[in-house]
Image (cartoon, rainbow, N blue to C red; front, side, top):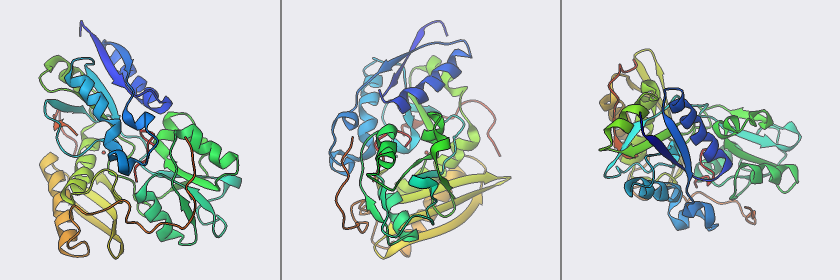
Length: 341
């Protein structure tokens, strides 16, 4: 492209690292890219995310800048992207996904099983809280806010015994070596879209759509489509206690899920055909329908992130848009406030 592309990004270290990766990938294809830092409400308001609007508060300011023509594209952690379409915007690329698993960072190099009884574990995610208490009901699971550095310091200072973060965020910051355990995705099911990035641009900006589309990973797009369709069909927001992880294996698309329902944690492993975006969405929608007709009957739209049984302990202080499929062969995205964490 001959024009300079303005790439909108949040200002956190992780967000700028992720955006820098996308910028470098576009530069390698001949584009001229500059980063434009944008502050979102989620970065400045320390109230619980469920109160101020869920993880969508990290997305809205970037989308507004796109629609106003202040930037040409924006990079999001895909798990932060609301499932409702954004009029006028296109999800032009889902680049190759990082490790989708959650990572435990614990004092003394401990694993989840090795944490002492009553250990204090920090997370801002209702999904992670539900999974932690399912595995270890004895834990004190405490709500935290703040970026990766802030959370890791809570462990090194002794304020917490452990925190749970996304492995992808640690990897992108070069800090994955600080994880004491990578939690298996089949048991500790990641958030829909975790580990994946979403690159949005204006739907009518065809040159940018085409340039960004070169970064798309068709296999990862199919996986996150199934995950996000499950979330959308459950009428659960991106801050709800829902885990969904899809993976392709030959001609099959496997979807693992864990949902905190009225009567406890519901788990399923289902398989569908990995043919195209419609098939991926169908797998997510069909699975959600089966859940809502069974163990989650009556729960549509009321999967409350605050309904997960809370540990009686003090809080810890501290601080997609319209789908676009590029013209390329197809193969075979409670909340944590730090994008990708």
